[in-house]
Amino acid sequence: MSDLTPESEMPESEAPGSAPALNAPFRSRRGRAMALGLATAALVLFGAIGLLMNAWAVGDRVLLFLLGCGLAAFLWRYAAIEARARPEGLYVRNLFLSQTVPWDEIVGVRFPEGDAWALMDLVEGDSLAVMAVQRADGELGQSEGVRLADLIHSRQSPRG
Image (cartoon, rainbow, N blue to C red):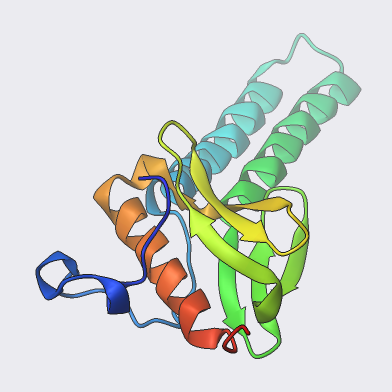
């Protein structure tokens, strides 16, 4: 799917039936579950190895556990990826950067075939990844992309 068309411009037969509210936050379902599960596993595994490796020095065992904590923190950040509607614009929290993009600076939304997440085209010609809308979510990801396009379309002032 190259460009996402807002549901208001779709024929009724194509619009999904029980979609979440337009202003509901966008979050990846599968990516979030995977990240939280791996973060928990990292804490348990590195903690258990740190406790059970009696042949290692205490400092080495603590550093191993801290490595597991660092991995868990990175995965926790991945689980926190979201996009949320605010009055001033769309707040996008990606893996490393977070920003609020004013509604009038968003040109449209694309979900190019082969890309892992949706892309917002901005007025100045740049694109911003919206990692909260992910292809890994399958049909849900596609419908979330359409919901994002609907949200943007509903919040923008008419252009002249």
